[in-house]
Figure 1 (cartoon, rainbow, N blue to C red):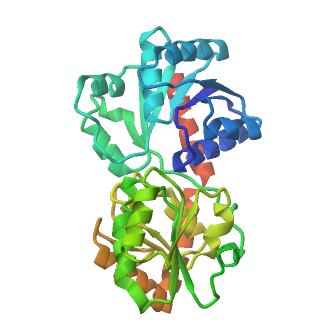
Figure 2 (cartoon, one colour):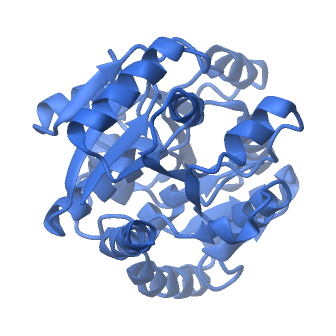
Figure 3 (cartoon, one colour):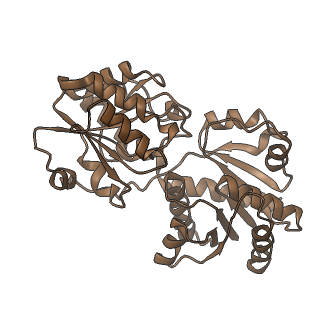
Length: 360
């Protein structure tokens, strides 16, 4: 079996980590793989550093026919059985390659929970006959996708998986680096500084909490709205309580240091960072966006509030810090639940999809 993984993303986020996990586990299952990624991207660097066979394309835009023709040639030379599409721009390139003569079977991964655009080009992209399966990261996404897919049976759910062994004990790295006293609670979000993560609601929650908690807050990550979010923090006079760490490559070391993990998203495919927090035995406070309710059970594995409800988010943060019994119960339940989200399970289920397509 020969699989091409296609991604046009420039940066490294949760989706890229999932591709990396999938490649690693499929290697263990003796699947021959080739990555086709954007030239100069973080994923190209990852492939170089980890000796992963890859080809780089320009991916200038979703109408880059030159990249489509090159993909056609790569698929032919590699004798690919399947091209697994992992990003939106890559999706367009793969479809145009099909119409330019590439007859390789396509599998599309869908990780975002917003509807497909209602236009002619989107209809062509998503209902292309070469796409044999659409792997949705949650049932919430599958239900959204089925509204616009002619053959609804193409849509299936395979949850993200994580590496359950990658997290170690507390390192106190955050406390040491940023000089945080031992009696101060560390509360953090490890989400991109982007609109759908809804940092304004989290900032309002922190403002409402005020001095009710002896806590310091970390926004771990980077993104297009960093300047705007920093300005909002300053406007609310919270710069002494909130630290922006920027993009970090040492999340595995930092996450176990947290006392509370917060995700304030207004849209979310699944929320695999929640699974990471589960594995680190860090209690989760989150919203009910997208597929999150499929992995978080309120009062059992986390505390969940409605999207945009800053008051409820603040109350949940205070509650999880002050209620030792509730925190202990949630941590224990979450740690048991996350065992069902091993990256090996995700890879085995994906391989089964590949095999079914090839056998037809």
